[in-house]
Length: 304
Image 1: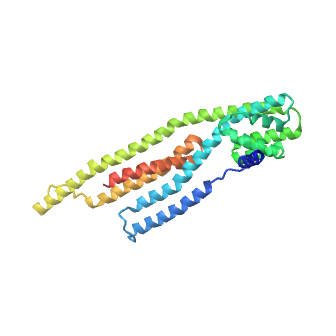
Image 2: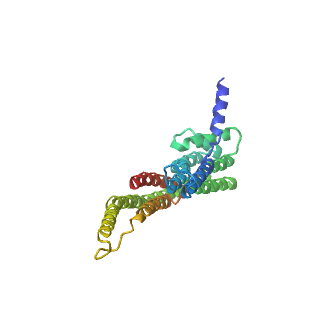
Image 3: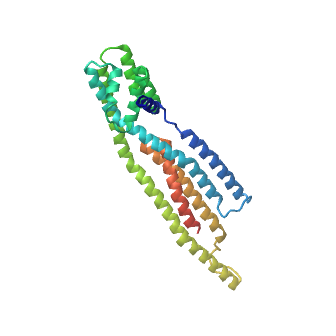
């Protein structure tokens, strides 16, 4: 019974985690396309639902950006957590190698340690080695599971060093040091770019506040002024000394332009925030979803 449970545990450990990124992206695109079509029908008067056509556009963009953006960001954070503990694992493997262990034995010894989010991946490698998979092949499979440039580069160096023979422990130590330096550089860049991300959010909020102020103060005054001019013209029968008539019928169009500009800014600013933060459009889609949600709520206030 214990042997059977051990086999089941090993199978669970070696099982590759499913990636739903493409499924969420394609599903979001399908839902977004349906909402875009509904928006087009609303724009030409084909349907009447109480929403504006730009609302359907905003909801469609949210359907595309939201699920995929949050899932991709969660996956990216998991990978970064793995990468942050990878130098510690490589250092421990190198130390085990200095005592005369082979790479496979050193990996199995290191798998008993605790490395946060990296621990399950190390146990997968150790389980594969126990099942007869060469250490180099187990590391290659690990690189395929994580799929980051840093991990691929480090694993390639270690695999080639192991195939060439010699002192792999020194190579592991150098690779661990290089990985640590790369992650410190990325952390410094992320901290520096965080300020710009905050600026983008603040500027977007200021933009919505400005539109709201214009909608509740300036535009109503224009309507009142237009009504006063129209009343004066009706009473005098001629323009006389009154100013030129104000075209108040274009105010709903102006309000619609305000809403369109909010949606455009929300989507574009969100993508820009993600690219500035860590150079990834997927992370920007998460920011776009948040800004679109805030903008959609804000435009409801504006339209009201």
